[in-house]
Image (cartoon, rainbow over all chains, first blue to last red; front, side, top):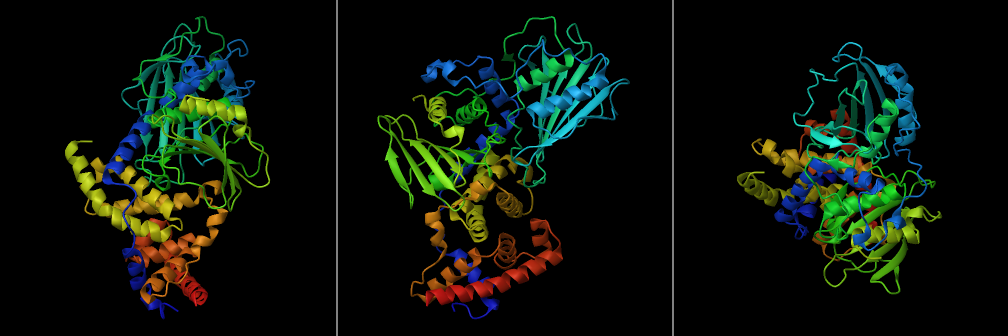
Length: 410
Length: 169
């Protein structure tokens, strides 16, 4: 036995881990670059990426420059419940307590909540305000609370200590007027509010507030971490809820636009050079296929070489138990065939597919290598339990769409 | 971030990487995940650096983030913690014939088979030399739990060392 007594454990540990660690696979510059990107993502996480999804839904993003026809990536029959419709909902603002059922139904359809919405105390608001709340736990564990306040004249809430001072003025798809949008980040939580003034189109003032809290994090470990909002929370879904609450509005829909600073939320077809574009592409793609992935976070992937970005998610709509996991690795170095892996070249494309067993299931991968030295690689992997059906996300069409979004070819 | 703070942060990173890697590699079974964990921890610290750069011991702050991140890592989905079936045998360390190297490899292999919390408690107590109260704070449990977890970990480590040593002979 190499160690005779456990009294030697401390010395043994120090000896074992003080030596032979080798050079770290990252430098201080890598860390600083990653930190900057993390801060940038945190700033735009709540509002920015939703723009791309909403814009795709209303046709504002033209995918033609990416080498394809937008019609080819039109989502299947709309089942997500996020499409705004003025005709289907009469509105409930005149009897705001009846909005409980409207909010609850919207949360069930859009957020897949299972509980019921309820009225809560309207402390801090003006007299006559009705406050409704509903809550759901999303797949990655965040608790998302949606609160709707319906006030006779104003939703101003002087006692709210968390209201950021400088809202964006945004236009929501299909709704008249501009909305104040506040986005805030605190320890382990992301908060976004939309305030809609009473006016010609709206008989009451409205405040929509979403709060995403990660109960697994405390203030220290979450001090700089993203607490992502679920994919279903975007300007399109906000618009849908407002439509349901206010009913038909007199003004014609206005084009989607935002007065907030532009961010890199549109897939550019070269996401290996632009991680933010890459995340937008992944998000657009998963939304297109109703994968409803709850987390679009990225991480650097030290095991794949400098600069690699790993996007992960779990599609909650897939009828496979346990659910498959989806990863998209952008950039990085191809380590070559892994033990037990057999690769098959894709005819006519700089790509290969591979399947290998892991301890938890079967990993199927498709990797596009860099083209003419201008773009990095993209690798899409799906891990599914064995045996299990092939997820829709690995269908030829889905993969082609993803590659077009992130890579500009296909 | 201001340039002077960023320079200060770079200096901290260079000093902190070896210490954080040592803890991460000892507490995480997968060296790749351990490296990711350290890098992620430092990236988080970058954003917080303007607030924490003046504290007495920023390394303690970094260690807290690292440990909490590791705990969160254990809560990730099963498929995100997957390991290639072909890699499964890599935990079995083959003796090299050198007593010193064999001792290191034996200990690493034995440590790797401990449950996460036992491994963490042993590493924090005996590699980082942290007092029980600090380990309890880091792991989010009582001091009594730290003591019993560390004791269980050492007992399991002893048993694992006997198994590993037996394999090497």
